[in-house]
Image (cartoon, rainbow over all chains, first blue to last red; front, side):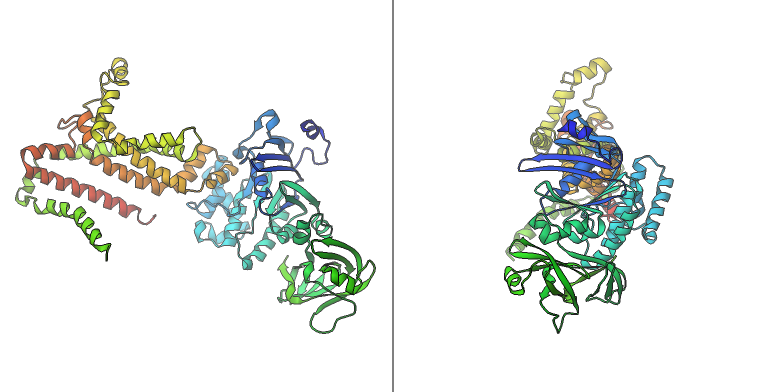
Length: 364
Length: 254
């Protein structure tokens, strides 16, 4: 198996992150193949205990591999078969930890300069470069602030600046938004998206939040019980879930668009009205269970109502997920009873309705 | 209310002896006795030896604490038990043990004598050694506790930023546990300053070289109790002053 992995001709060979991680514990085995091209953001999505954090720690060198390998830009970082194992400090991987782990006794600029200082960049130059980073991250005012004086969103940006200042070839983010409250979360998510778009190394984002994963990542890898159960572009995974976990969690209706006081013109056509009067580039999301289906155009409350055509049905748990084509195309979860009552079958023409209050809207 | 009475008894028990010391002080003789020959010599020696012992205990004790708190050397519980032995050991026994090792015919002492012509017992160095022996466990336990309370993931974060273990220890761990080290050093210093049993056994009682304040107090008690009280008061004043000064200095950061 090892020889096979070594010789496999692969489009990514030589650049980016290429790993097969096998970590065996008493009651748990992680076995994951992971390839991330330079500039690509991959989200590792899964329930608690699936092995997400173990994956990240194994890549960073904080947990030893039982088998497999980690390669970065063609260089082998770890390979138990040959006994090779670079310690974390020699891997040139940047890590943003879930609770950031900013050094509490150092100021923001000292935190950001830490990686440069560790590589023997003279203090003066390291601090100058750290200031440039903080400036770019909109933290110019806070260079001398201690971590405890920073808000959650600011601390997150300092942690990201600290990881990036060391110029890592690969960036690992562990639940980067989990420590934030809902109010700042949307803004920080949008900000993080721009930062990650600008980063040209490989990036792995570990999260249990499907929205974070879908907004921030180019590709999703769904991890369940230590194994990848599905992989693909966010939309593809969302529309073709292969496990119940993916179906219930990732099966989000997510649209990009331009909002004018809460009325969103969707990029793919169609219009949605959201509860909050946001303006500008936005994302609108709502779960399939929020979609109501009608045989005729309903009158009354729902402001978001449009004609759709059934393209497919799948059973997920107690519910039936209906795929509907329209402007926009949408997923709806209905009961088996409703399927019979409404005569839902491929090519049936229906009306979809979503209450504005059921939608979530975020700045993109 | 039930607790107030024993608490008051405890407080009185701790404070009354100090009051007694002040009350019984022969204030009229204070000036002459304070400047009697040997008093300042003994005080200087006490402060010097306690400080040197504290430095020695810190330099060696912090790495030992790190070993106990962070490494996975086999037999750590046993190591920790061994470290605490000097805490429960009667100091005189400690002094005898030190003689057994560093005495002229001791395990290490005979080699030191043969190879380097060094004889430790009954020298100022022996005072420092005896004080470090009894004081180091205080520092090690205090620092180990601080290390256990400090999140080891900070060291991991430092490692992912390219810091070697040594750099992470120096720039991250050490500053994080600095309050613990300071507290441990103060405890160790106070313990070293009051050291009597191990010192008199291992280093003897020679004015000028090994007679520290506690030994001077003991000797004075045999001949002139008033002098013993004066010396005790001086030692009390100096140690309280030093601790108060250190506390003020650290108050803003802790």
